[in-house]
Image (cartoon, rainbow, N blue to C red):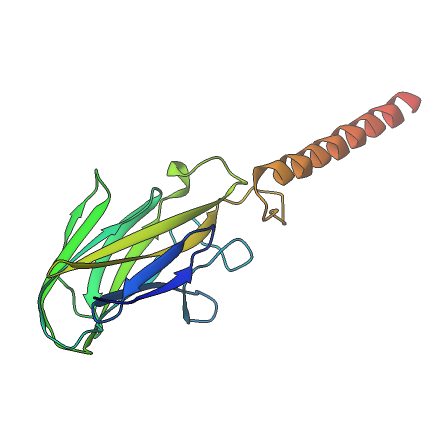
Amino acid sequence: MASWNCEPLYGGGERCWGTGEILIDKTVKNPDTGLFVDNLWVDDPRFHPGDQITYRLEIKNTGQGNISQIKILDNLPSYLDFVSLTDKDGNGYASDWNATTRELRFSFSGLAASELRTFYLYARVFAKESLPEAGISKCLINYVSIDADGKTDSDQSGICFEKKVLGIKYLPPTGVEDLWVAVAGLLVTTIFGAKLALKKQIEN
């Protein structure tokens, strides 16, 4: 009987995997540092329309015996397009992408005890015309699951993107509520300036 290792997840809950089974670890590349991290949230670098996102999938046989068949299912969230899947050497890897269900499936055979296989999944943020209204920072979670001869595991990785508002240099990380405050302040300033200019014209 397998024992279980667990770790907390952002937003609540926990992720667990059994020792002597299969482990999948999903991380995302920080565009500023080039390092792979679990998540990139609102206080981290954000992506923008058309940006490419690089995910890394590490699959390890943590058991003592060989695994014959490994199947991976990756669920890309809304606003991200699938670009390609490669192995650790950058070679294209066969996969099945369903744009309707937003599911990416691929598989491979043979994973020896303690062996690690690495894949890279490339996705792209939608063009600005296909994103929500400007000024909203939206965060997405990408889920992945694995089935290895009946043994399973799953993981997730989060990113945030924003569609910038022209004329506003700072976009509040807390989302739309603070943005409306900023926009309202900008409108008040504009109206006040227009009234002041009109008043001077009348006086002259």
